[in-house]
Image (cartoon, rainbow, N blue to C red; front, side, top):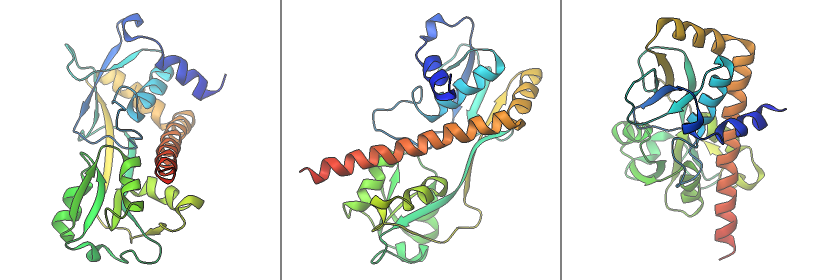
Length: 234
């Protein structure tokens, strides 16, 4: 059975059917690789990654907003192993788009809601944030001419830029120093924390994390493709 098939089976099990799951609570507002507006945190990248971790631990994990007990904290936590990390990136039109970050001064840029990148571009370069509910919609905002660049995680945008359907919008602005988002996991229990660290440091743990991340990068690209196709039909 492939990993993604196992993952789909895990995600379809109702939380009520799980026996005393560990509670994982998101910290901070940023949710990377959000493919669709309607997607909730319990259905996206974080839930997929936690399902893979739960399988490796042999324990169930429930992603909850308001728990009676917090076993795990994920997201913008100060310590713990990283399950996601990326530099900030900006994708622009191949020919007529800005060539540098400073060119965004006084210009709109497309960005996903709750992204920490907005503050960086506004404060350092004077850009004007135009906010979208998902990464896919922010990407389409660029194609519609609603902004000069789409600002998101470079990890995502590098792969978007390589796709044939983005050949007219495949210029990446230079890498910014000291502009990285890193999301971590921290367990309240020291023994559990050690188990998680060992799993994530293992070859299998790294492969699983890379596979889940790639799945959601592909999902963002697919949803953007669907949105673009819908626009072309009108």
